[in-house]
Length: 388
Image (cartoon, rainbow, N blue to C red):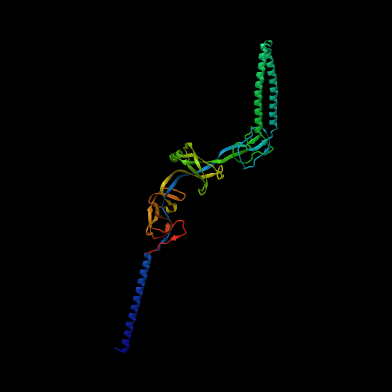
């Protein structure tokens, strides 16, 4: 074999060896990269969530509804005598007390009638005084006065005595009419829009009033409840007037707190509801006649109930569920049975126990067995869980 041909074979063998070596290195590198990727896939990062503790607490059970505020008393003030208004003593929207003057009507005709009745009584008193003197004279005359004269004089005295009584009644009536010339508030309350202006002639026979007064301290709310809740409501009312809360129509702001006073005496057969009446002190005037409100009626309190935040309760195809966090910081699916829910809290009858931790935020990233990084609900400090 020639020297050049020998050199060629040597170079070929060297080239093949080098290619095999580099191929083997590439294979080993790919194998290590695949193993690392598989390891990273097997060890998933923990999902950040928020949690809250399952608590044991007393839970108030409320019946919710809609109601309308009504004035405790409403009075349309009218005149009881005829005359011209000479003074309006109130301002629209003013709070007045019972006995405060609202309007004054020209009192002169009524004062004249009173003076006339008093003068008539004075006249009759003078007449009866003279008649009594004559009766005394006839009595002293004895047998010198006829029986007819004595009886006639006694009758005259009796007639004048009755006339004095009639004069007293006339004076009382005239004084009453004079008092009616000053129109006063019959109740404490807020006056509305003035219906008659100063200078106008008012008449007792007309239906138009002077002003309307509504009593708002206290005030009432009329609302409804389903008839099937009547036993619970009656049981609560038998113990003590149940607490009733009035809120804005969106249910976000409490306006006032009062008590239930009355269950209507019949159920509305068309709607299957019964009307209820609650009374509120309303010292701050938060409730106003005609206002629409949401209501909550406390019918009972569940003692030592299992309570969780509403955010922990999820809706699934199989019903309600929640994710709890075990000691290994892994999520566990718990099917729930919820009996009551209000103010962001739910009562759990089955599925959770006090002391457990439930996820309240971030459930959409969680599945059973997912490792989680937890943080106490409503807390800014997060507690991270390290992987081993």
